[in-house]
Length: 150
Image 1 (tube, rainbow, N blue to C red):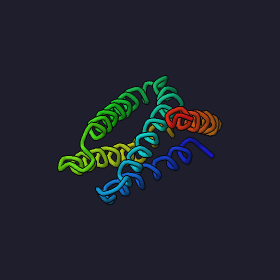
Image 2 (cartoon, rainbow, N blue to C red; image 1 turned 60 degrees about the horizontal axis):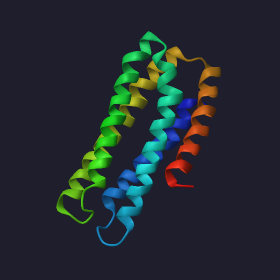
Image 3 (tube, rainbow, N blue to C red; image 1 turned 30 degrees about the vertical axis):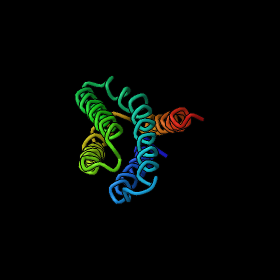
């Protein structure tokens, strides 16, 4: 497995969770559970990705600005997550905030897969891509445990 395959697995989980979040009933605990899962997924992915994908890319001039941009988008997503976390789950603004979060997540993932992966493909060799995938996956799993309170 290379770093792109590893990242895409989490990207697909994020997309599915965003869709589920927007379609969840405001009644019951479904929204809360999906949001909690999404929040952990986003945070674990971002931490591992920044450590084992963006950081190595920043060492190359060609990867510096795209990495900074991607990290800034992670920060924006964090802010949307916190905004949604503080909103009343059954309140009127909740759905609009969830849509905004989902839009930002989809934008970030699409941009990363269409632009950033291509840039990094010119910087990283196959051995680096495989090694980074292993490191990313180990940290991603560890962060999910930490964030879940396990």
